[in-house]
Image (cartoon, rainbow, N blue to C red; front, side, top):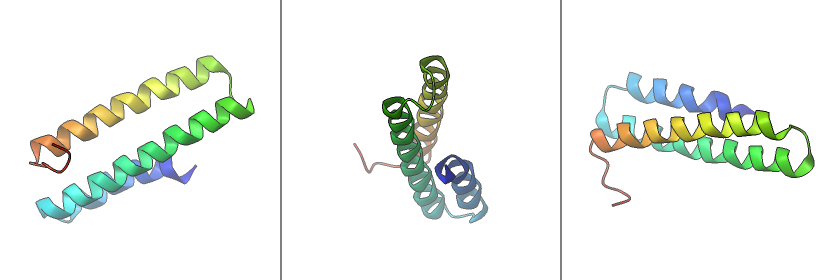
Length: 82
């Protein structure tokens, strides 16, 4: 599951670029990776790889990360989805 590593890596890389546009672009990539991870959670559920309590906790954490990413993007001035 490389997507779970990609999320914080893209946040860090975008911040390190020291340009707001690049930061927003990398936050968008991180958000895409988060959606990929959420899809993998659903596949794990359908295939019976993980039990519901473990998946529920992971999904709650993913929701929290998603809200944090969205808030950061809004504070940086992203108007893309409005």
